[in-house]
Image 1 (tube, rainbow, N blue to C red):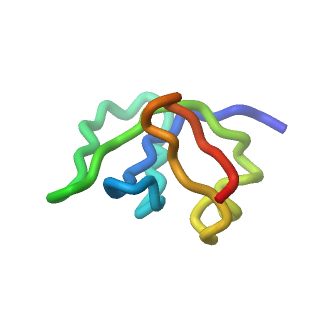
Image 2 (image 1 turned 30 degrees about the vertical axis):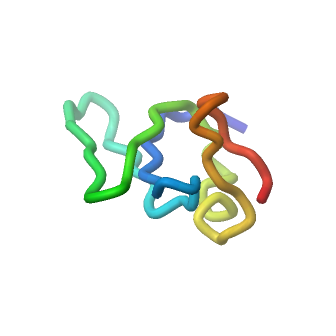
Length: 68
């Protein structure tokens, strides 16, 4: 399973709002709204659907994705 770059928009308590995967070669700036932040990381491309399903959150302190 391939690792792909992703920007994960999350709220203050780590709930994942969106996962952004720009097309290869695209230059993009990803930003969140009020009370949101963005974690730039690599994810397994087959797990993206699971991440937005509510079973995971962002741990901003460790800059990682953890099971909720």
